Image (cartoon, rainbow, N blue to C red):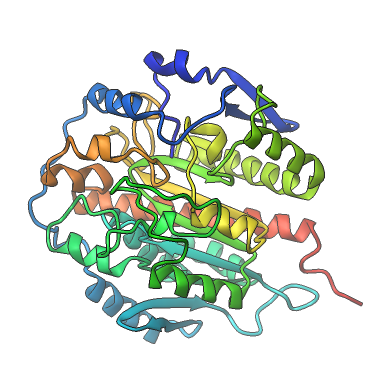
Length: 416
């Protein structure tokens, strides 16, 4: 999700234009209309420019969980965590476990209300670090780690958190069997392109969005669950680069070419919907606060930072169709960087590629199967632990900030 902009491509994308959505907030924008299929050569060249030697993993590491062992550990955790419950979303042979963390009768709000939060982990199969970070997050929410207990207690006093720990279990099981480049579900559909939000047909096997929106049982179940539970805040967690992103992925805020239909549409919408513009601004400001501590990466609207658009994503569906107040997509590991879970001073910016990229296949096709795992995931137990610890703390800190924002908007005020 980070901008894949390198010196050789700046003349193409001309990402020199900066637009401030509000005071102090600056995000990168292209002054051209962007097309999702027009960065193929750029992505391919970016892959050639990378120099870090990645480990070759030939078997699924035993310090990673299978879907079965992950749910076993979560089940054990719930027995010693009174405010954690486990249910499942089921249809046919598809079962998606769901965790809920809710400290009953604990709301500090004058009206007793809580902020409803929804997390998705593991939309893409090969991003095994995503469900692992969800497991660490669950442990933190159960107060199992002293360094995060106070943060978790504070968040849960005003928030109810719902977690889908593995959105794509059928694809994850293929990764467990050694298919380390597997991104889609077992049917070959990218679940993060299968949402009815500017969905487009695709022939790219990496980002094939299905025959139609919600063609997959997984997204059907998730849509129904989200509609019933009405989240105020949404997160989807990925890997393959580092970035903290907000809507929209299908378009950017208007840049230079107002005549382009998409840019004109977004300009008109932001003018017509000041509340939408305000929410995006608040998200960007919050991410800019936490970014140096946890990521040192790009932060802001995905379509504005990236030199391409992405269609049919859960990020945009939640924001536009379900009208959540705040929607985020986090990329938490770049296996080709020296920092791994946080860019270091020696890392060129924008080296990875993202859950939203339409042309991933150009780089993945150059990789052997044993290289894919290391590109998306830590390859030692120590690095795995450091990554999950870092990002679980980041989730909690962002949630603390969101509680403050919802407080400002009056969510917790008494109706009397």
